Amino acid sequence: MSAPPQLQKITPDNVEAACGLAVRADQERFVSPVSWSLAEAYAQPEVAWPRLIVAGDEIVGFLMGFFDIVWDPDRPDDRRSGLWRLNIAADHQGKGYGRFAVEAVCAEVRRRGQDRAVTTWEPGADGPERFYLRLGFRPTGETSGGQTVGARLLADA
Image (tube, rainbow, N blue to C red; front, side, top):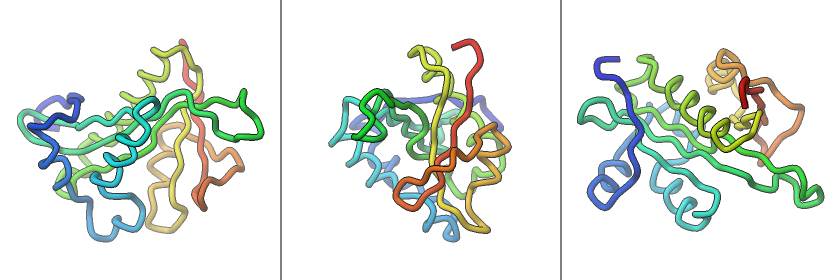
């Protein structure tokens, strides 16, 4: 990382640049574009937490957390929080920004009093599973929309 990363809210001044963020072409099948994520955040503002990842003056990624959602309508007490979306710009991958994003979401989950973060990933040989496993997520045995559900226990919640 050249400049230390920071999170930044999406604003009218940066939304166009945010929507222009692109992952590598071979990763496009694994993650929705930022514009789609922002539409989902607009439709569910009570749970969505969209943020840009910036280093210096440059947008290097996008994340969207979710907080306190009912995961299974048949189990209303099963409320979860975690990482909903992660897009790191193609030319900024491998620089630690993805790890920063995951840790930022986990810190926010802890700040909100929960002791477990959840995420999902598309299965596949070139998918992000190894990344999430390295960061402490473990498959729960569940799937969501065909994606693997992973959970990470958080210390000091």
